[in-house]
Amino acid sequence: MRGLKNRVSRGAAAVTGAVMGALCAGAAFAAPNGPDGSMNLSTPASNKMAEIVWFHNMLLVIITAITLFVLALLVYTCWRFQAARNPVPSKLTHHTGLEVAWTIIPVLILVVIAIPSFRILREQLVIPPSDITLKITGKQWYWSWEYPKDNGGFAFDSLMLDDKQRAELISSGKAKAEEAPRLLAVDNEAVIPVGKNVRLQVTAADVIHKFAMPAFGLKIDAIPGRLNELWFRAEKEGLYYGQCSFICGQNHAYMPIAIRVVSQERYAAWLAESQKKFAAASGAPTRVAAAADQ
Ligand SMILES: [Cu+2]
Image 1 (cartoon, rainbow, N blue to C red):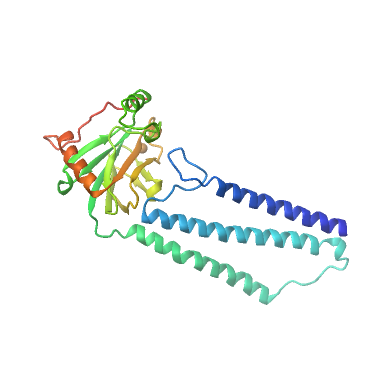
Image 2: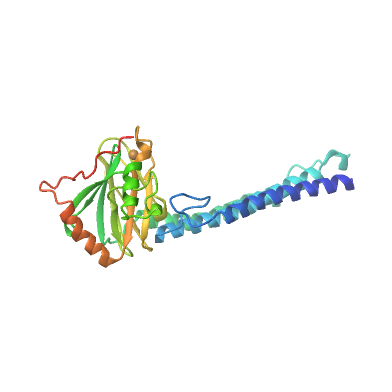
């Protein structure tokens, strides 16, 4: 019996060790998430994403505790109620106190999870007064950005750079290699100012696409004939990448999204410069690069 006891406790220790090892490995790889990605969520760059990451981490603690508790119960049950230890089987079928407890406690855990969950959902859905409104249209296979009249009044297309264009960009010194990652770098980045509420109106012109920017906690369908709205406030300057997240056709993997977050002054300068660059008499988006045919 002692041998079995030792074996069971050794087995439990091995399983616990494996679970903790996996968790620690996750933590060890949780480096700041650049475009190359890592094992954890993107490093938050918006108020919303910070809350999503916090919620995710909180859930991870609860899930881990529940899993370890159930594992301990299983191990204990296998040992305590094995046939060898119970020559006369128990006739117990009900335990009211236990049944009430295993109903109430999970309900309380769900309530604890639901309160922050609904709060975060509500914050995402209720759009506050916004400083800037941008319209984004998903197309096969690139994104078009429209800056309204009170914010530049121009539109442009944002296409992925192919390998040759990337190499030219890097060798010209206009961008560092890590700033122009393969399959993510685009010809025309969208630029927004830091610390401002940005409202995005997302639609599509041909098939259903999906606008996704992990660092800002954004993901919304781009559907032809429908205008979906979402908002965010970028808290950190930098260059952020996202991708279309709905299989939308042959070049679905080649329509990245790039947003550069800059100071208010640099934003104003970019607006003035872009007004000239993208000026189009008809107001129609100007194609400044050929479609990236893969
Ligand atoms: Cu798409």
